[in-house]
Amino acid sequence: MACEPIAGRFFTVNWDDFQQVARVRAVEETDGDARIWDSNARRAGTEEAKRVSGSNVAAFLCRRAKALLTRTKEPVEAVLSMPVVPGWFVSTGLVAAFGLGWALSAVGQEREINLLALPLMGILAWNAIVVIISLVALLRPSRGNVKRTRVEQFFQRISAWKSPSAQNVVARLPQRARERFQELASMPWRARLTSRFRVWLHVGAALIAIGSTAGMFARGWSRDYRAVWESTLLEANGASRFLGALFAPASDVTGIHVPLEKIPGMQRVEGRDALHPDSARDWIILYGATLGLLVVLPRFLLLLLESVHTRAIPRRALQSVEWQTYARRLLSLVEGAGAPAQILTHGLSADAASQDRWRQWAHLHWRDVGHVDFQAVPVGAETEFIETWQSAAPRVLLVFNMSNVPESEIQRELAEGIIAKLHASLSSAPLLLALDGRELRQRWAGFADGESRLSERLASWREIMNGLPVEWLQAEVEMGTR
Image 1 (cartoon, rainbow, N blue to C red):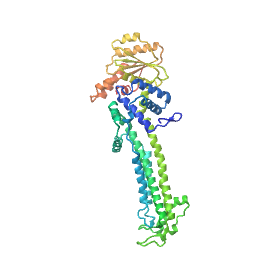
Image 2: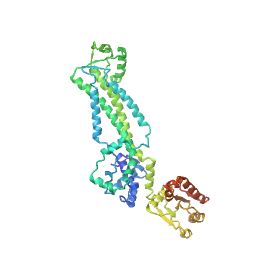
Image 3: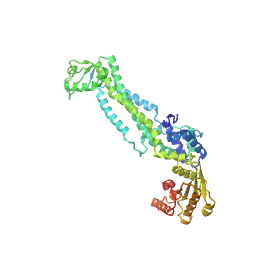
Image 4: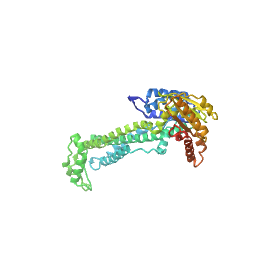
């Protein structure tokens, strides 16, 4: 169930939802021939998701992915999926944890229970260390630049068995789709696996404590255990203070008195039996209650915190800058409720991909832009174009090819003519200028000083247009040249 609303603008996003969004994006960004979804299907899915989701970006991405996946018969999910941790893998570990606790309760115990040799001390010490580490892990920020780990490769092999039909899909999907999907989903997958692993550790620690308690009660049911103690380091007074402090919380909860007055008679000295060993019944109950209070309860609280953290990982991933930028790019493909705009291009081929890119630029500048109309200015016939051109919208974006060397007689006069026509039509919006430098960046990609060359070319364009009442599109180089 994807992206179900909780209230108002708040939506839950689970891991399956995130994978759906990543699958669609991976296919779209690698499917240059539009074999899986053509432009009409993508635009229809975008319009449907925007209409239902409103301004909630995460809900928009989830609903759009769901809509597009229902528009294809290709089982994309069979190929583009992150490794799954098998249920038997986790169950085996948890059963082993319970068995370990059961076995620990019998260490050194035959007919007498040595209170200072119980696994309680080790379990409590280990638990305190792990609780501190878990709290630090919850509070510290996660590192973003982590390479693919052996753990991911291990679970990838477990999940790698595919049916013959899925193998056929591999050939039909774009060649780089799987690689791109890994790039998009690996980091959230690792963060989620780490968080889930901590959840399993908390459950395992609680099961060790429960198993140890169950083992003690099971043996106490069929055997008459006596409680004693012995120590090289502690005398009777020291043992009384230590055991009194250790079992005080359990005593307060259960109401069972800690029989500290019997401690001196319970001591084994020089291998001889204790003079007055006490019945182990109350000590076993205090032992189990102590594990419950100091191990099971803290681990349960940490488990709840970690579970909330785990469930929030997909939603936080979709709130990152990268995914927000992707969402804005998609939203630019559909009309908004604002005024329309016209995009004029000079020296550029207006293919579908380029038009989508320029439409995105217009959307980033005018967030509510309505219908976008495209018109090419013929190279060499700029004067004739200006004479016949009439503004079809109050907003105009003029896109130049950054590869061309700007000239006052051509590019500046073209901008001046368009500005004059806009003023004549009483449009209050200034002319918006942008540079498309994809072609130039590809041409200079092999040069060591390619970036400096681009900066110099940008400066020359701005110098040519200096003094004109125009507005440059923000980050035109970063957007238009990549």
